[in-house]
Length: 251
Length: 268
Image (cartoon, rainbow over all chains, first blue to last red; front, side, top):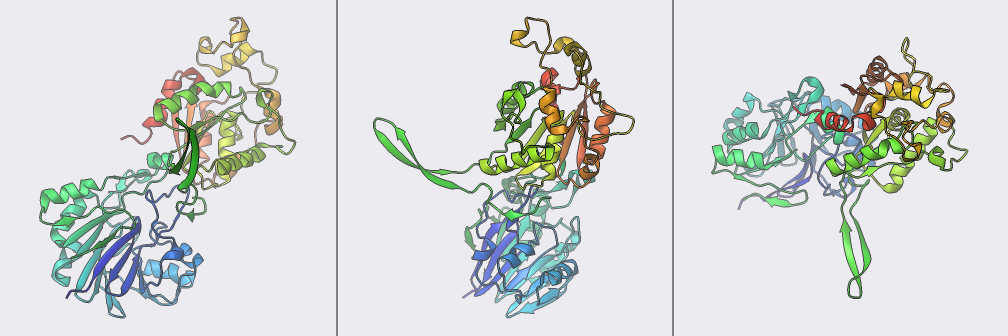
């Protein structure tokens, strides 16, 4: 029998991935500010998370690395925190004690769990992750752009059960609309290469407030654009559009 | 960016029971989720009458909740002694937003209201997500001092305030002499002091990290477009839009053009 694999979005790119008895939390975000809104209900507060075996953080932006909320909620700071060097530096300052800094193609293990950083690109340094335990493999795309090196992931890691990909194609208006996150078409093309059993989009409900959406960010808030694009170019791959709090079990 | 607060706490889902009369008393249990993006309109020295028409326009066209308070002391309303300056008034409005439990509020202020919008934004309430400053006053700009409006006749004031003084509204009781709404200078000075500016404001605006849209009437002769550009230049995240054929009160003189400019921003 295969190891059980379930994913539950808490909000945005903050996902609880459960593989067997292991509980992995990605890109924590539990708060909002004047120009950062999750745009969807927060399923759990930081206090309600329960025990976490590993914390996986792709980069240091506030909406992916809300370590302050975890610390304020009494999060166990001995929990292994896995991320690139940029995140490790911040985590050290917040009091985390078991920090595993990994860059692209480097791995670390935590009690039966192997996390490998994979390439990424964003407005700041970012990595993506392949998360493996038992006979399961998950790709976590954070809020990265699609980069060609990602196409090597299936050869290196074998079949992928679950791919979690950003899809809003976020552009930064003051940077002449520079794109910093993969859009629906980019994500669908990557999906067709990764060929997961199940693909789940995230990172699309976010907004910057009324004026912020006009002056800071531009993003696609409709995840159907991704589902439609996958149906067009890789129609045999299953896509699930999921609300926060819905536990999705991967066959 | 203001200090983060737990997501969903500013406007949580509220469940309450409502009693209605419908063929007999009926109690309905109601979950209320409100994610509207409200506007807080801040009038200038001319009082709420200078904003009311635009408030209607904004509410109708954007299907938004539009709040238009009368600053205490204007239009004969009482003003407590504690409201000694613009910052104190700004604090009162942040308390109002707290009490109304709003989030993602856009401030829109004209003239003195623009200064007030800046002061509210500087208080970093997580409820305020941006500000629109229309022909604002308050900063001091070398070589571009605001025109001193004290002692001017209504006709002189209109000549300075409107691109086309013929467009100035005629109050119902003015007998058609076109005197229009004149500023309540006494109420205004009660907040601003006689200089109607704050030498520290421009410097403090450098710490404002909210998106701000600064709009200016090209024909404003109270505070000129050069003054307006300096206003926008003092704010790190500001965009400047010049409104043609428009004076100091765009929301009165060219409201459709003003609304269009607000909605056009970022549309590309």
